[in-house]
Length: 79
Image (cartoon, rainbow, N blue to C red; front, side):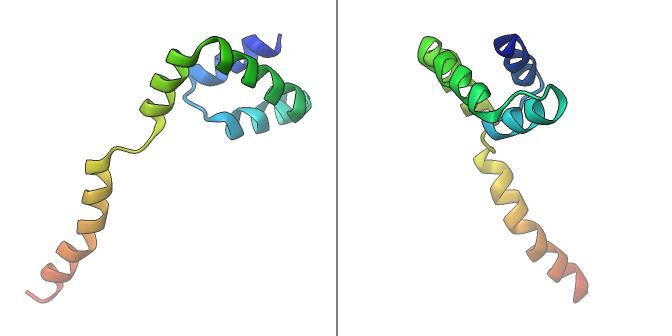
């Protein structure tokens, strides 16, 4: 049951901490149980989780855009 709920969390693009919190709040599953099942899934499916974590991480170009946005705002302010 916990494995199925974790898989649902993965479909919703949750990370480990969000999944643990969601299962604790909504399914009343202890965090230690969720963490134990998560670790076993991680061991069994290393390639999947590498891809999954890569897809969750922010893109480098998005970070550059966010850093440049205030600079553009300042230029427009002085015009």
